[in-house]
Structure formats: C-alpha cells, structure tokens
Image 1 (cartoon, rainbow, N blue to C red):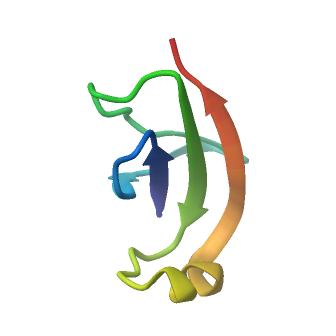
Image 2 (tube, helix red, strand yellow):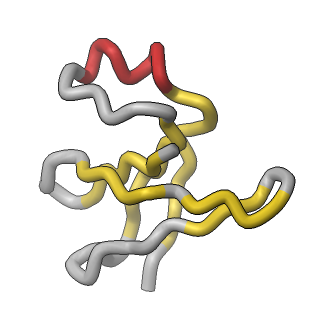
Length: 66
C-alpha cells in the first residue's frame, strides 16, 4: 500500500504505507512538506488521476504539518 501526498504546488508523490496493526500504519513525510497536505491510501501508484478512484482505499484526509 502507498500514501499519495498532494501538497503546496507540487505534483503528487507516493510513499510506502507500512501496516503496523489493525487499522494502523505509518508513512514517512518528505522533508520539503510543510503546512497542509492531503493524503490518500492506495493499493497501487496510478499515473493517471482518473484511475486514482479505482485504487483508493481511504481518503482524502487533510493533514496539518508543522
């Protein structure tokens, strides 16, 4: 699984989602991420935004970063 991050004016990026327990997981933030981001948990990394809905498991979620 992956987290698709959308932040500031940058294009979306993916980071691996590590499942740590039932309904729990961790994903690393990119160093350049700050303020606000949107996160979507996916089972694949589609290149086409139209395919994102087909692989989305959870989200989008607003993530406030400091």
